[in-house]
Structures are given as structure tokens and as C-alpha cells.
Image 1 (tube, helix red, strand yellow):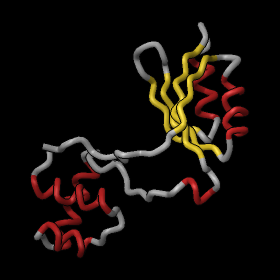
Image 2 (spheres, one colour):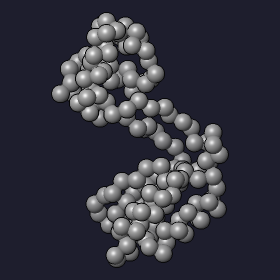
Image 3 (tube, one colour):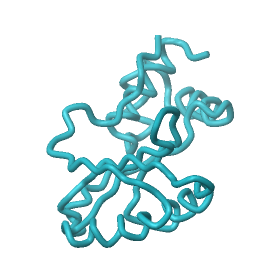
Image 4 (cartoon, helix red, strand yellow):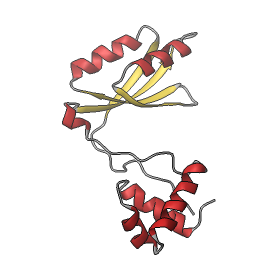
Length: 145
């Protein structure tokens, strides 16, 4: 469980994971050593799993983002999962219930690259692809309270 101060610290880190202990202390009203101790405890408990940066894939030439629903052919589930994991352009993938077994996020430089990557899966799975036009809700935490 987290208390109100933990939640303030987590929210501040979600906004900017590079915030200094001094800045976090000012935001939370604690001393820097107290903030460091709280962060250490949150890490030990697995609440804070890491600190990260956000990179714009377009900076590396990835102009298109797609959501791909993937339904493995009978007996091909493990092979499809292995292939998804082996294709680095798949930046996220969830194994889900329902008609499709996987829903994945894919970044590509062109429609031709999209076709090439999906062709690698098509001998083992059916795919349904939607191109992302806009992301009105970026990845965020669910309410903590």
C-alpha cells in the first residue's frame, strides 16, 4: 500500500523521472534523505520498477505506428509468440482473451516494411492491422486511490 506522500512522489516521477531528490523533496515537503529512503522502499516492494525515458520513434524514421491483432493458426501459438518477440519493431504485445491471442504495437518506417513484417507472421497466423492516427491518451497510471 502507498500513502499520500508516496503517491505525490510517484506522480512527480511519472511527469519527469529525472527529477532530483532535492526537487522531489520540495514537491513532497520531506527532506532529501527521507525522499531517498521512501524511493528505496518503493523499489524494494516492487512499486517502482524502473526509471525510464520517452523517445519519439519518428526521430529514428519510424513514421507509422500500427496496432496488430494476431490470431495464431491451430498449433502455432508458441511459434507466433516467438516470432513477435524476435521482431524488434514490435514494441509492445499483450496476450489476451477472445478471438485474437495477441494485440501488439508495431512501429515501421513505411507501408512496405509493414507488409514485410506481417508477411513473416502470415504463415503461422491471421492478422488484422489498424494504423494509429493519434494517441489521445498516452500511457498512464490508473488511479492510485
